[in-house]
Amino acid sequence: MWIEAVVGKDDLVAMANRIAPIELRLGDAGGTLRLEDPSELSLVPAVGLHMQCTAHLHWPVLGIKIPVTIKPLTVLVLPEIDKREKGDALVFKLQIEHADVTTVPTIIDNEITNLINRELIKKNIDFAWSFADALSYDFDLSQVIPPIHSLGLKVVGGTVRVTEDSLVLAVSFVAKVTRENEELTETTAPEQAHA
Image (cartoon, rainbow, N blue to C red; front, side, top):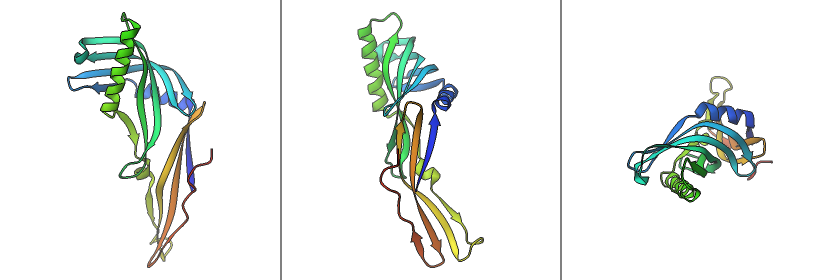
């Protein structure tokens, strides 16, 4: 069986505004990238969330000893399903499309953008929700419907897709009924969720 959760663009805008400001740690020398004031949020089908924000970069490794303002900083938020030991997780990875550092030539902007992206990948900076662990559950029915002991719903996978107006998480479950001395399992859901 499949269950879909649909998050519309307005909800994503509201979430981005509630999450900001956020501060990401860069490098080992105390570098930070602070993101605030998200704006111009749009959904790019089959890719992710595109938005602009104001950022403050402080990264001693680059010789930036005091925070410099990057306005605008164009960010892509890329959703994907990550297979993990405890089950699938919905992961949001950040990728900087362009950092427009005030009073710096474009060629240096591009190099700063590349350095930040390499650091985001190196540090594996992402936001994750382990939905398989969170949504799998066994309901104790032993006192309600004997001889049935429990009804279990276990997440066996998921998919995520982005349309022009929403982010959709489809979660596949298998149901399991446990009786006193036997266990019956329903068939699993098909490989792919319906679009």
